[in-house]
Image 1 (tube, rainbow, N blue to C red):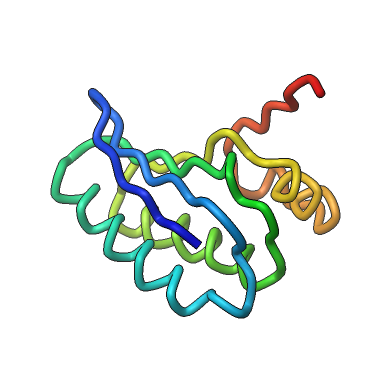
Image 2 (tube, rainbow, N blue to C red):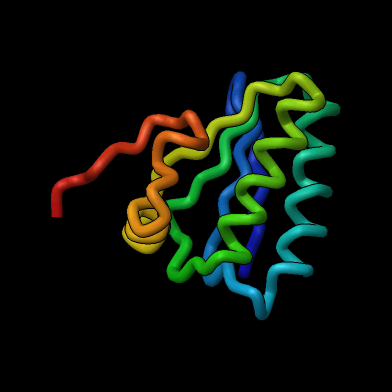
Length: 109
């Protein structure tokens, strides 16, 4: 899993690439918390781009919930964007698309 941080205008973006599974959850958690700390220091909105997530399981969903909770506690504007097919399928399977409060756009195939 790669966690790529970029700063584009008014948005601090964190892009996740690869698998968000139990096998790499601890590593992803550390990298996400570190990346979010950078976003806090930049005083910008934070977007987490999920477009390149190739696989996600319950541990990956827990990480997304953790990040959302941490952002809410710090009163940060955080949004998940560009959900991959794997993320969409997991959110649909668990009926969680509306829980995160982010717009989920279904792209044409």
